[in-house]
Image 1 (cartoon, rainbow over the protein chains, first blue to last red):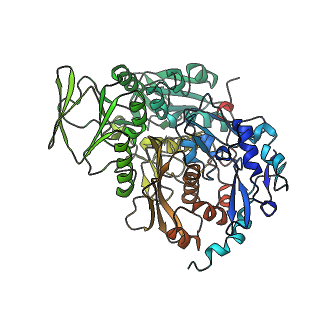
Image 2 (cartoon, helix red, strand yellow):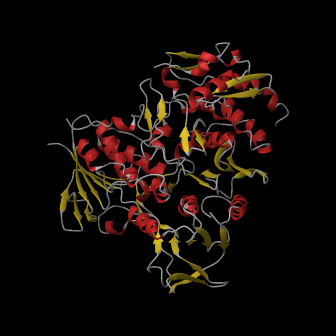
Image 3 (cartoon, rainbow over the protein chains, first blue to last red):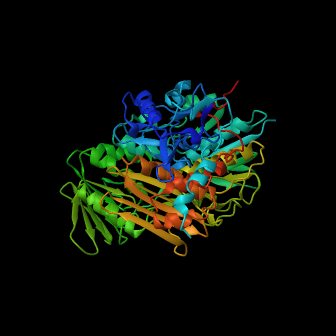
Length: 156
Length: 441
């Protein structure tokens, strides 16, 4: 299956992915509703986008008491709005912190790969986010380890 | 002859086990379900109470779905006795059901405070669908609800009661609210938040009597003024439904003691959910975790093993989350371990509170509290769960987090927690979607 592959060293921190994500997911340009989130590293001199890996277990999906999270045609774990009751169990079950909850609609939401045409990947001007047929992986771990040494300097 | 599986209890654990059996079996087996109630999710009853979902929405496996899965049912009947030597379960109407293996998943029941009047009119537990219907019938806008007990179950219906326009008073015998879910500092913030949202709270008060006075309910306490209310909801704890297992030959401690395959001391008897006492992922000790995620995981592991897989379970992680008046409150793992190393962060104005508990450089428990509109806090809820679940070594991030318990995300990512978590699955393979359970052919 195709997944979002992140090349963190290419990210410039422009946040176009967050704008595009929120626009496609909610119809409004509101990064607060984006399910891909750009994190700063090294005191805002480098950045990396972080989102759902579409993990094999699907902790959100197996935790849902009403079967409101399913696997879409493109293989994404996807929330069925009409079935979600807003109990938040998925937000605590997902060990990656990539489930979201909208207090206005009382629904959980997450990355659904935009049905196979991920807006974040299309919007990224530097190809830091691509949509590829590869096994999902920890795209940020090594990058973050290297780029956080300054934060940890002086920490015993 | 096809293997005969008997599932006793149609709650979360039982239904997950049935699905796992159908997903994992190599030859079609016979499955029989005994359940006192039609299968539904107790987790979603608060949303039925506030009328945001219809009653039809609460059911997890309708008669049609059970038929599709090829499950024979005895609904509306309870198991009364188990003979683990003869492989027979006797129902309360005398029906005997033979099995090759069985799953004990009879859950737990609410316990009311033992005071005069606790069984009277308009005094309810909030546990079953029937009790939810009864509360709905009596709860009127402008009415006064008194909730006895300030634990997790009570808090799951707090929003619903307020949204129906009722006034709410919470009384708790312990000196503070949520005594088994968060620590005193966190409880203080939640209490202040709720009072600011119009909820009356009295802690450290012992209920002694409930009386009917002029069509209303009068609650009397060991000390302090009486309270008059229209509806009383008792959320004073639960007990494991073990009584019917007396003489069964199954070893019972606080629950049915199970191994890492969810098997009891009798090899063809399994137990799952609230009634099972299995391994705690964090402490390694035996524990009863009466929570939805444990029932799901127990049920799936038991089902897979009943279907002939040899599947080991890593143990269950205690997690709880509840939202009250748009404030998220969550705790994980060994959050109340008095001997752990602790770091806390408090921002009373937001309000936001974090407590991190450590064994060496691994996170063993956490408490998080913050506004539900704060997406960063929502993400941190998941990441804290991931850190406790994965047991990654946080190395120098530990010292950083002890100084700033709010900076979870860089610690999570840079510790390569995702790498540790990605291979983890409960059934040793990718999960199937809820609609993909194999149906009868």
